[in-house]
Length: 174
Length: 76
Image 1 (cartoon, rainbow over the protein chains, first blue to last red):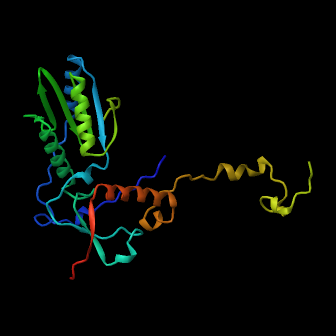
Image 2 (tube, each protein chain N blue to C red):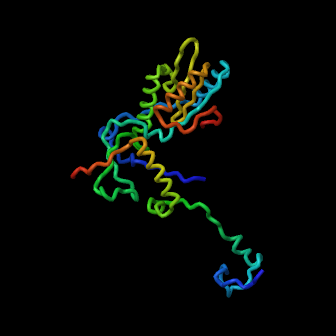
Image 3 (cartoon, helix red, strand yellow):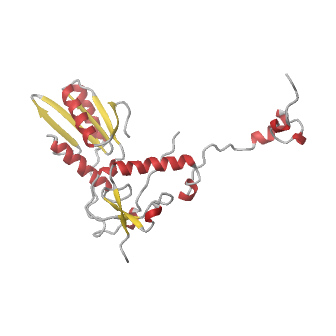
């Protein structure tokens, strides 16, 4: 057992129109994950997963936010200072959306296409090969008919985000 | 082996005499041994070095991801 601390913003202080606009973020349905499993099985490839560390700290925010220094960790030289946020924080209403925005635009920049029905599925086809990337909040499930495509996405993701684990899909998500 | 141990080595009270397992029955059966106390407030957590470490770990993530910058508070 390990202690884990999470610094969160008090999202209930946020006012709509001033502190946040859109908050909707698509999340994969379990059925979509099952379809992916079936598709991978039929095409004879394995699924892998990776996990992004502190994912919400990866989303950029459009609004201006200030938070007070966390109690016990104040900078004694600058007690009258506050933190201005550059990225989203857990607890902010727009955090999940901004994370989805950041990850999806990254995948699109890597040549993936967003699923027409499932907005959390990203597909890339090349030379008769296919790679599928399904995002399930902080878990990313991916698989390909081609090993090199898999290695590419892992490398690209590691260059962009802090990935904590990556390996074969081995535990259920829900 | 020498029995000439200094009194500092005695754990507990010298006057208490011998405690048998039977005499401790009541204590063992009716006491809950709490191994994990969850702090209810930040002030509580700041008393515990394990929690302080966890908080440091979290704040390191903030530094690594360049989540924020310290700025002077705007005058009200």
